[in-house]
Image (spheres, rainbow, N blue to C red):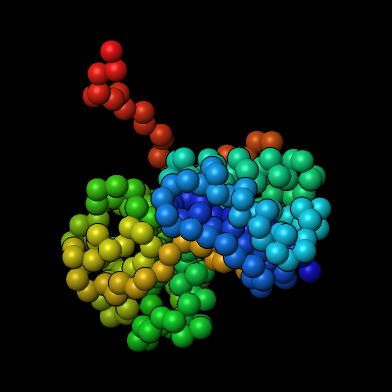
Length: 234
């Protein structure tokens, strides 16, 4: 049994939830732009107060570790690490593509998604990496990884060995732009959310799979590149 604060900030969505024994009991999120640095702390304070909880009541903090937006991941992980350090609570890191896939699986269980032959589907979460590139990893319908995480420039031949014969389901904030070049894929609306972290975080907590609060870094997948502004300031 555990009470776990769940944080996912790797995309435009800033999402915070509280899970008890793997079941979400509170959720607060916004997709109104990348204002995560201001919102994440406010959301945590609000859901704790609304559920008459204090930070000390938490057993652990779980955070989406990426891949995703460099800035978004850094904000979420930094906040989670600071909270864990101050409270002396363990930190759990959950792959953001795993969590996104978990949202899709939960939506299917709830009847929100309608995909024929879901049991045999290949699930392809996609996090936007600009232009036609996405961060992605393939899963089966039970959430078991079929491939490693990678950055994929999506074209007509992408994932060809996995497409055909079974539903190839794409979702996430990078999926819509890929639908035209993957006409045989099934596009469904699934957004990143802290609720996808909940069950995975409980499983990790049960296995005592914690990361070092001092040394843990987000999984950026690609190096952050700083470009020089073309604007003349002086």
